[in-house]
Image (tube, rainbow, N blue to C red; front, top):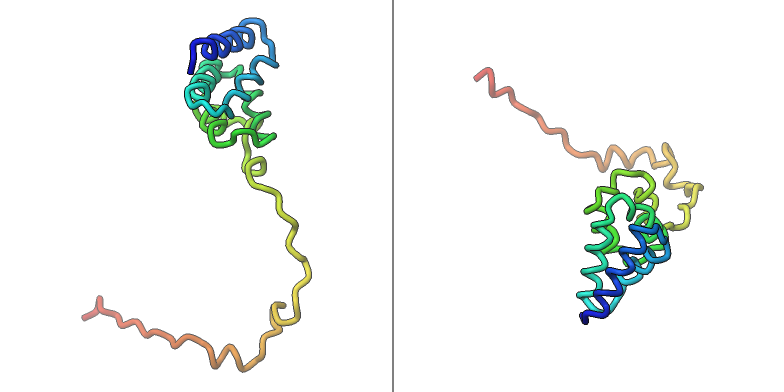
Length: 133
């Protein structure tokens, strides 16, 4: 990582924290997806240094599923995981189609063949009372 990239990230952090420029904070989140490992690391550290100010940015990144592995680590570092605005299990679990609500005839309760339960029952185990011996 060159000094210009570091200076750019630091300038973005300064704009975001001092002035409150939200687009500068979003640019830090975007830098988390850089191919340069140093740039990703510095952007993550600057977001963590932002503390509570980073929570809305982290929440937005989680909702958009941007750079999830590192964004979730940042959320944990700033202590945002306990807040409902950042991450909830419903936010992180991908949506899937609902399962069918109708049951087939064989899967309905009480529809099993009457003799099946007796023929496939587990043998009962007799427990001896070893305490009395």
